[in-house]
Amino acid sequence: MYKIASIGGDGIGPEIIDEGKKVLDAAGERFSFDIDWTAFDIGADRYLATGDLLTEEDIAELKKFKAIYFGAIGDPRIPPGVLEKGILLAIRFSFDQYVNLRPIKLLEGVETPLAGKTAADIDFVVVRENTEDFYVGIGSRFKKHQKTDLSIARELYNVKFGLDIESDAEEVAYQIGVITREGARRVITYAFDRAQERRKKLTSVDKANVLSDIYGLWRDVFTKTAAGYPGVATEFAFVDAVTMWFVKNPEAFDVVVTPNMFGDIITDLGAMIQGGMGLAPGGNINPKGTSMFEPIHGSAPKYKGMGVANPIATIWAGSMLLDHIGERKAARAVVTAIEKSIRDGVVTKDMGGAASTAKAGTYIAECVRKGK
Ligand code: IPM
Ligand code: MG
Image (tube, rainbow, N blue to C red):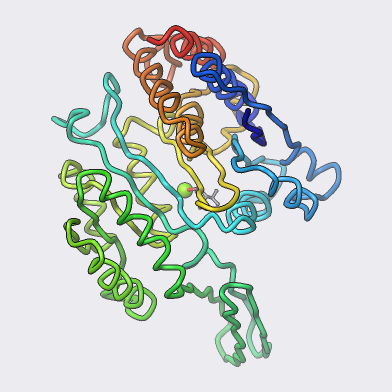
């Protein structure tokens, strides 16, 4: 029996999470385990009604779970950034989910926009650092002659910033990226461990040629960590160049590790080469705490309630969740069933099919149950 939290969220989130639960429950039936779901009402509607984003009580409750199954957040009634920072990033930070694991794998039968590339060429994983870098939320904006005396502290390995800025410019804005040796070490170590289980190649993506302090430290940690993994081949790549190589030579990658913001950017590119946002799952992992699994796409509010959303990214994220809690066989069976649904053409409109969200989900659940 596993106790798992779920957050449907906004837009298409609740529909795709329903399909994901259906498939995970089917996996439980086949592999003899039960999932006890606890649904949390967190998202735009609650925010509009109560003003609450992710509350202290939410955090205290969610902390009791090893895994959270998350749909999507984002709503046109609320200015951009509020829900993203107040809920999604708040979950990643509150539970110190320092690994954002994003497989870039072209499933059998899915079309990639990369001419001449097949499923054999596109199969790597991006390990995105998930708690530091330009996502730490340290920044400010101020107008001419407005003197700021900022004492900014963020509980991040006890790093505290005190800034005193005076300027004649009409307006100034800044945002600070932070990397700590400990923060880099834990995620880079995680990536080396993954590489060791796979094809034993790890690429570090950064921009150390320009942002040389922050990514200089990153490289330093990467090089030191590499010494403990003599069997893993390593390379450095600049983020601009890597966008080119993802398109030109995706087969050259096995595991890619990268700071938070570059990871955000290159995994949208990764999603496209694996067939689109409807097919891209992610796991926000704290190996010793509460992890969260989600499709990497957003809430697509204009499709809310229409039954057209592709549930595959969410179902695949569910497979990652099963893998994380130790149900390896069930996790593999879910991906096999997704592939079968694609082969059989029981897919949503974005993939050229005619199935509704629920029909696609039900079909995958049936395939899992029957072991197909
Ligand atoms: C993602 C998203 C988020 C991010 C946003 C919604 C805050 O783009 O999960 O990739 O930037 O991490
Ligand atoms: Mg993103």
